[in-house]
Image 1 (spheres, rainbow, N blue to C red):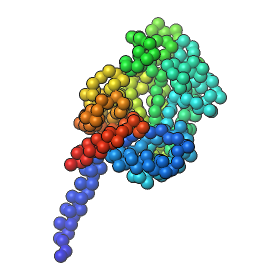
Image 2 (cartoon, rainbow, N blue to C red):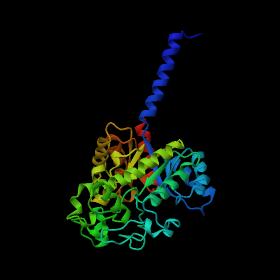
Image 3 (cartoon, helix red, strand yellow):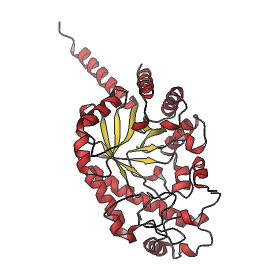
Image 4 (spheres, one colour):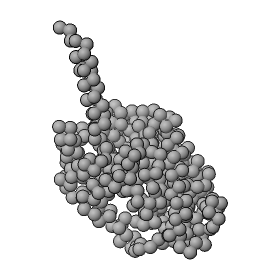
Length: 360
């Protein structure tokens, strides 16, 4: 029996509308993971299958900024039904063999000490200057090499900021620190290029400022330096038909205060704020609060929010489920877990069950 044309049209319209609704409302689950070139393809396949079977949709893979390794393992993840993001440590470049040949590329503290050989907090804090032409072009070149890899969804920027002027509160005892004010040994970047560029715009030297912590022009100069790198990266990855995403601090005002990062002003497709509540001595409901704050700050922009959840900071699978639901209820389009190695079988079972409940 032939269906009337009008009925066929309405049926097609209904199917299309359902598909569009699914596209708009599907809540995604991701995981950050670090690659190892020595790991076999079979072991990678096993890892990726475990994630997929546990409800994970995407993997954000740190290959040490190695496009060859990414080219090798991205198809293995895709074969298991996972989307792949190329995770790169951007301004913080520990062990970067090219950058280490150029000591002048590194950020300098207010004390006049360079990250090249005087590293704040930890030895892997080797921060490149976002203002100096050669160092920023080096970072953008690395971004482009990853963007060229076929089959990835995005280049995923991490450490796209300055060193922490303020650490998360729960980490302070580890370093025997009190940070009630901005301390000069953790305040960057006072290199010659930054000072020269700032003087050209504002006709004053930040090194002689009475109080740099309340000098808004100096603060904005550094916020804008990071923003400029991000916006250039956005153009580069879109040229290669990829998206730009980033792991960022919990919400824009907090990121601004702690690490000179104002991500609500960036040209970027999606952000993954690391809402690691235990770092800040907060309760689980803070996941919802910080997610909502970031979503509100992005109002009117196309940028989407994926809430980052720190698995070791959760007390139970009940809290894991609660964190996922808090993220979703407060406007996130997905969640991402740090990290793959921390996900237990019980965690994956909870993720899978929670995902199934969202689709019912």
